[in-house]
Image (cartoon, rainbow, N blue to C red):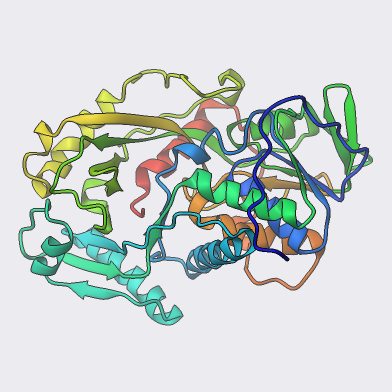
Length: 422
């Protein structure tokens, strides 16, 4: 295969839908594009339908931390697959995806955070992940802005990186097209079709595409399509937000990204400034039935400018960053991540409808997990040998629930509030 980048076609007159496909993927975020690539790599001819442009919702708003240091071996293996995919995609398309290999620092000041470090170190040792413990001086060398008390535990993962989620999604899209997948933008799916307990395809406007496999990767809107069939994906859209300071010399572009559980915060370099995110004690969820089709300009109810979240997070973060309260904020980015109550994912077959799969619900880790989840779901769909154990991610593990109820939404929002990893 020639290593030539295939440009994404510009929006225009929608292409005519084929009468059938081996599989239909609904949604062109990073997960949908990863599914398209891995199904095509497995020899299928998938069709991806995106109602707007590729990767314009949650994916384009992600912080993009590809964190290897985790407390579950299965998650580490999924992230490793994403790193492998990035190298593969660059080789196939001939285009760099802009991976930023800065390494990461996990910093613990409390006993609870240290206990979390111990669990992650045990997993890293078992899997052969390189992790180095840094002295306070070594941390300051890498993060010139940080203030330490001297007794913190700092774990450095030199192979860690971050990247733009949009770049990864479009990299998957280019490579998927080269392998024979069809990805169409501005083609909304209005209904998943089923008969006799099995999916038969999808309807887009007046057009019908027949398919024995449908993957619902429609992000915040996924349950609007699954629910009419009696299925439900165990997730809810939960607000995710971060801020970016104005450029300053104290924030070098090559500094590692930081995971700081004691402040429920993470940071990474961005445009000469510091990108940082806080996780609120009370997460905010949205009813997907009330969300607009386009999140551009959408305001999250209750805290439209993010000031409440900023004011809540600053007191715990400021001790680590002197003068932070005076740092000018240049940008505020908010969107939705699809959180599952236990903080894992909800990828796999949906019960009750054969051929229907959940491709949404990653608890804020879609960019990092895309490669592993894409490969794993393709293996399930095609019945090939499994490289990953998806049982912990089974969408059926929560039993019956109402994905639109306030109680369910709050369960999912609480999962984000408990999250301590990057």
